[in-house]
Image (cartoon, rainbow, N blue to C red; front, side):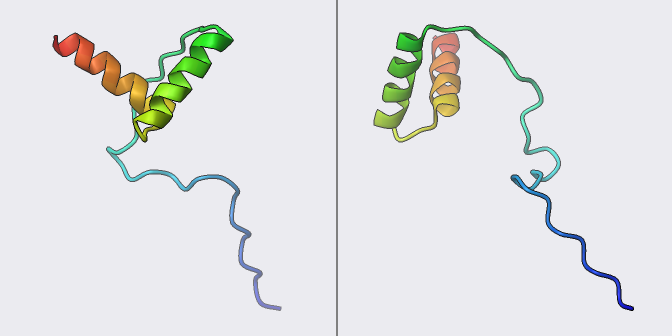
Length: 62
């Protein structure tokens, strides 16, 4: 009897080595702040994470 192939695992496949972010920063915000961030991100054609990251890094760069 031949072996059955393993079913694929659900979820996103792992990123190649060196491409994944190493640290996660958790921040508490109000629902209104979340809405404002999501709207700003959508207007910039970015995800919320991308928008937050680029905004913070631009602020740090001065």
